[in-house]
Image 1 (cartoon, rainbow, N blue to C red):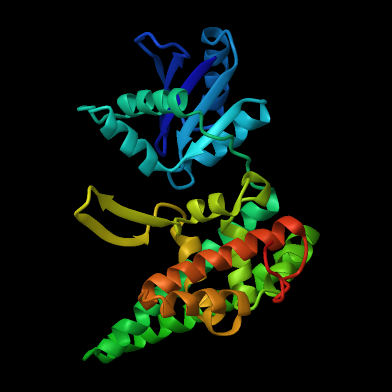
Image 2: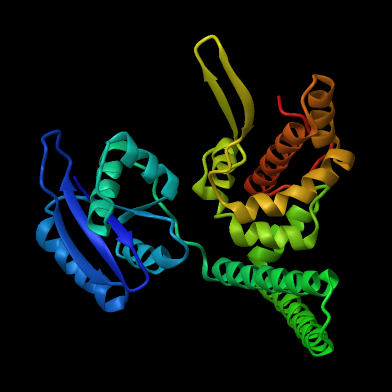
Length: 324
């Protein structure tokens, strides 16, 4: 078997190919343009140099990886998309001194050979479109908040105040337009509409949060357990302990999709008060002496587990359900 590591940038990507061998080997390397022509040339290059099954691995860097990963999957090539922090930690464990695109591609290839990460499944066109709409809405809302903060901070110039107010008015119109486009997009796709109805059945989840979850969370078939979903979102607990004397506080690892974590924060606060399953967990942790921040993190994790269960079973939320 052959392993290929790809380090992507906006305009090009570096490739390193190694064989599945315990013996030290010099990787075969090449640089391609990050466009459809470069993708086709990569396939030709792979066919000439890989005589066995190929496993391609790349980092989840922004959206640069998605077109190439989708292209390779469409040609029946196994692709893994890995959190960049995992690659960085692996590079440190190998005591590597150089940090170049070519060296990074080699590290990614060796990571794939050593770890055999799971396969990546591309999102459906409808889910991808929803994600872009949700992220654009989030950017507009952040811009509006920035402008409101500038105005509330106090601006002495009347001209500048008028300019800020016009900007806020424009952003509010764009936000309303995006919100309507998101509703229309979900309503036009039966799968997304059904998923949203399942999610809003969960106490604490509203339509806006449900839309964000559908845009940011990959298809549930990509995950084998709720723990994997928590790891994807970066809300799994991280313990800090060493020997008999070091006992650090357990906290959220935060290695994962930050947008998904942010989307779950306020819903978890609501669920901790009104969702019987989440509320029961939250109150037990508080009674056990856990601080509110730790208990809220656990509530976020429980809420995400419920979300995964509802989507996987295709059954609306049952507040009386208790796992056997």
